[in-house]
Length: 215
Image 1 (cartoon, helix red, strand yellow):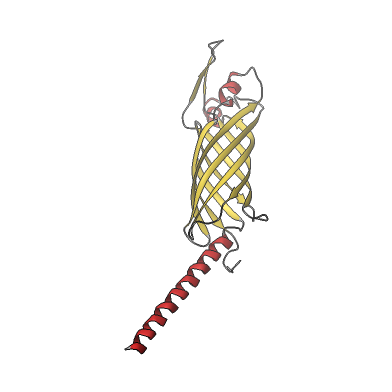
Image 2 (cartoon, one colour):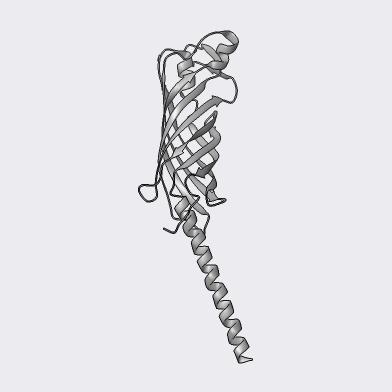
């Protein structure tokens, strides 16, 4: 009986050791994958604008530091009507923004084997135009020549559904403005759109992670 008990104890210990090693390997694999270059696709709301975004986050050449380059398309969710307080002039249009975004951020260490939090600062540079208005009324770009600028900050949670992909949700806020004809009612009306709170959901596909190894 004593020999059988010792055998059972040793078998349980071996199972626990192997289980711990397997979990450690999964953890190392996910951490390794999480530092690689990844394709980032997201959608959400930025102030009164809805948007879609796609881009790349570069490999973490510095631990927990993330640098990314994205393309973002934003559009008002409905027709915008603006009435100037002083002139009482009214304009109604549908602004669209196409922009490049540089993201600088950081991640913390993994919690468990699948979760981590992150934060980003975003610099947006783009162009605002009115394609829907032009399609209907043949009016060209009502906003005119412009440079659209924005600065945003977000905080989010990322969950790794596998070793090479994750889903995330983030929220934050910021400011957007337009450098253009300062007397144009369309510039004034479109400048503030996209400022305020932002929330987005997305997915990341980590590239070059088929052959994972311990770090």
